[in-house]
Length: 84
Image (cartoon, rainbow, N blue to C red; front, side, top):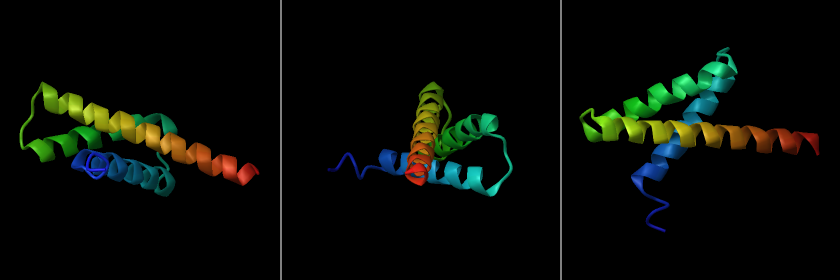
């Protein structure tokens, strides 16, 4: 249970919600959403660690990948629910 409530899980959820909001509120094409996710993920990782290194970059990329996956899952579930 502690792993679920950790700061890293919260970062994934926050990034996913932020990406979904950006996707819905702006006219950014879907092909640019991963770029936005990478920039936001790396920025959050830099703020979290107060430094920049290879490990911070990898952590930011992991945040971005999980955020993109979460947005795709949310989109799929919402579209699937509308079709039924």
